[in-house]
Image 1 (tube, rainbow, N blue to C red):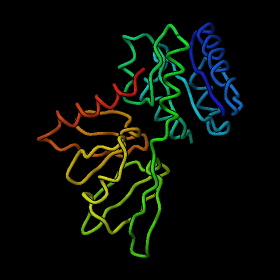
Image 2 (cartoon, helix red, strand yellow; image 1 turned 90 degrees about the vertical axis):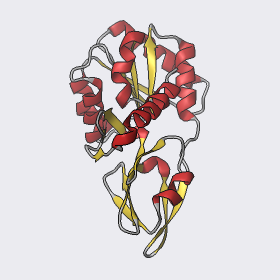
Image 3 (cartoon, rainbow, N blue to C red; image 1 turned 135 degrees about the vertical axis):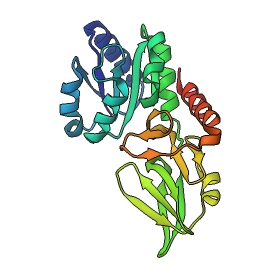
Length: 230
């Protein structure tokens, strides 16, 4: 397990590193911890270091958290991203996080956050293609788009798979992270970088939100984010 902590406050880095070391000391998996004062230094290292998780402070980051998250993904980061900050600041970074850790740091908050993320949530899907059956990890799906008598499954790594199934046939087999946001789209809410008139993903792709039900769709997304908060 490799974890990076990016924060402009030396004391906060030291405290969070100490708590992470305590959390992982009772587990069989060893942990390597790195601290960064500057987001640019983290961006430089993230692809090479292959971090499993990054803690990013919302209070000092430039660019904004959603832009920083997109930059991390573009550099090859595919792990869990956690936003830390004062309670009043956390919603500003909510669109780009796998979870939130309020300041001042408390070990119980950190433990609950990591335990929740570590619970299995993904499932393997068997999807019919023109050549047989293709198994896809739902956690690798960015969004699903319907077409003529088929669907295209877009992955977080930029690939796609055309399947001979309907949206209504796929949707019940997906996990809680997925939202039917349009007649032609199902989105993985873990992959949303920002939300407005439509969803914009870490990949840079735009996923449409149905106009007549935009308020309900955005409320479902906000509820999902609140469910991940400690």
